[in-house]
Length: 144
Image (cartoon, rainbow, N blue to C red):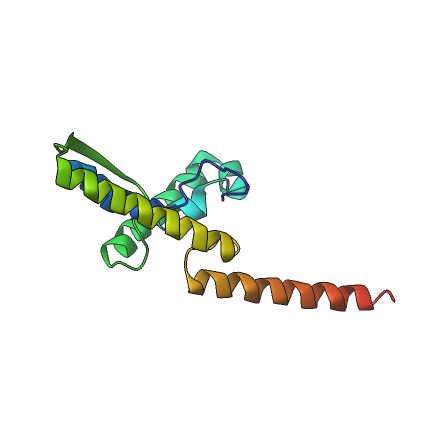
């Protein structure tokens, strides 16, 4: 998704934790999306269906999305909040500096790991790159 939309949140899993550092969350409403977003966004086939055929399919996907989110089988992708800023004192300023230092280290490590933020993500990237390279070599070998 980042290739198609660079504004996508790279650290979306950090949003709630980061919000709680600086704001008191008065209300939070999760609106699911971990399944439905992937199945329905940019889905040309679903978009081309007549509304009478599309509506029950979308409804079934939304029901499954809600259930799978409740069972924690897929993550919540969309939330909205009502929040109040926390007062900043000298202790808070020290914490902000600590968080910034952590983020700087995380970004530096990411630059060393091909843009990934965990060892698992890095190894996954490497594995997919190797598989792709092997497939390309096999394909090219057919013509040599």
